[in-house]
Amino acid sequence: MSVNCSNGRILTGNRIVLQRRTNYGRLFVYEIRIFKCSQGTYGPQCENECRNCQDNRCNEDTGVCEVGCKSGWYGDKCDEKRCSPRCAPSSCDRYVCSNCLDVGYSGPNCDPCSGNTYGKNCGLTCQNCRDCNHITGCQDCDAGFHGTDCTLECEQGCKTASCEKNSGNCVDGCQDGYMGLNCAEPCIGNCATCTKEGVCLSCVSGKFGIQCENDCPKFCGGDGSCNKNTGNCFACSYGRFGQNCTEVCSTNCLQPGACLRNGNCVNGCVAGWIGSRCDMQCSVQNCEKCIESSGQISCEICNKGYFLDNTGGCQKCPSNCVSCKNDSKCNQCIPGFKGSFCNEECNTNCIDGLCSIDGSCTYGCNNARYGIGCGRECRDNCVQCFNGNNCTECLPGFYGLYCQRTCKNNCYNCSRDSVCESCKAGLYGRSCSERCPKKCETCESPDRCSSCKNSWSGPLCQCHENCEKEPCGENGKCLSGCKNSFYGDYCNVTCPSVECQKCDQSSGICKLFSSVDSLPEDAHDDTCISVPLAVAFALACLVSLGLLGTTIYFRRQRNEERLRRLEEKNYVSANFIATEQEPHQYSSLQDISGPPRPISSEGSLALI
Image 1: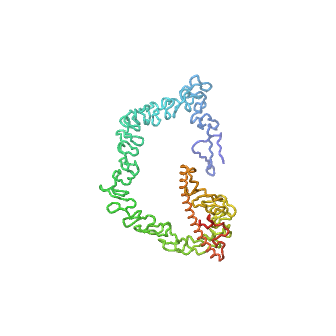
Image 2: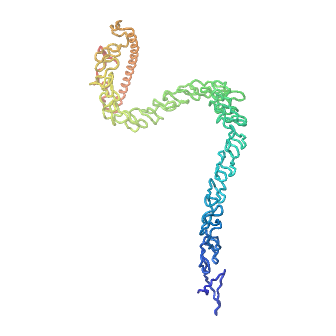
Image 3: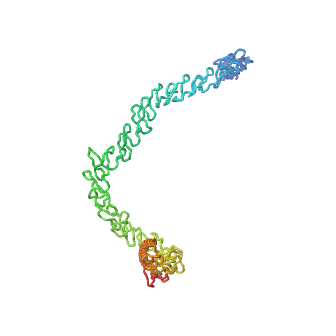
């Protein structure tokens, strides 16, 4: 059911109740629709628009603008078109103003100035301004500027670069070194800081006094500053102390020149001196560090080799002591000695003869021994061991934890896991199955001997042992001369004279004698030897004697080396035969294929 009002009548009010009486009772309306104008329209049928109102907001019945008019419109309903009241007379043309009457306005509608503009028709611009008024201009200047139009800079002496707009006075005072309200004047003379009135508060480095007119003492440390009033140094230069740093630190300070302001040494004293300033000499002999108590000086630590007695003196430790507790107890012995008095020698079985004070070997035992003092023997075939069971090194030919297992086949020495490290004499190769060249005692490969059989030398053992150097000819002939006093194709014949140090390889004629007396007779003729030549022969004699001594020494060394090799060959041959259970080609110590044995000039055998 709907109810329509006649003549399009509009119902208004806060509440509408519709009812109708009938024969059956009253009729009530449960749904009512109320229509109103949308924003921007007004009138009985909302037929009018208020388009010139700000935000198009007006009263829906009367059309009166609620928040004012848009630019260029006036009246209650903003329906009147004319120039702004701020427009100067005769300056309005077709509702456009060409000259505004009020300062701070401009434009066709005389609107307020925008941005940083102000004044008549907005013809002026604010500079260095943080608050620009469109009528009067700048109200507050940016930091660092002042003046009516903020075009003047604050003085550089202002502490925070901020000053008052009108006066230019610094807001937060002056930087060091400036004075005055606007901090434009520097402080007087050597003042570092001063009041606005110019009274000096502090001085530049190195100055003091009321007006900082005096020099600080020359030994002030750091930047050379001192107290403004007293002139006392704030710090001293290195090695100085005292109020004015005129006193010198003691040379007996442990760290030279390192003392406090009162002269006390920082890190103590050098040996032999005591006291806070290290100015008291230690009177106790052989004392490393003294102490002083109630005017009495005694020793706290003695020098090495001395001990502290009951009286505070230092007594010498027993002989062979490095340090000791007293005259009957050493703390440490010199190398090779042990015991409380260090008067017992270390066991000869200690490695390098070194042991600790209790007799235990420093680096362990040698000679197949173990235990404290190396007094117990290792297992058989054991060269070194930690105890009776664990061997660390076996005799050649044995391996294993207890050195009870023998190396395989022709292996002379093997590692703990049976890997062969060296072969028996005359053999080489991974399994020691390859034979060395016949003149090699031992070898690394077919073309490299590590040692030669008797009377042979060189990497391939092809030269006679007296050959000067390789290469050599057939059957060991020496092609590069002979060593020492030998000659011949094989350098196996001694020179004819025992005084001859060097002779011709082919003829045996002596080239170098050991003394002038051994020269041929015709060499003594006065017509042949002048005084200078005699001096030369004397010098040659001295050189020859030196060479003779050297030759004898090396011959003796060579003979000892041969004896050692013979002993090794005997041991290897015996060991090899015992292992293989068959004759060995090196069981004989004589090599019939070698070169002729050395003989003397008379033809007899000679030992060299």
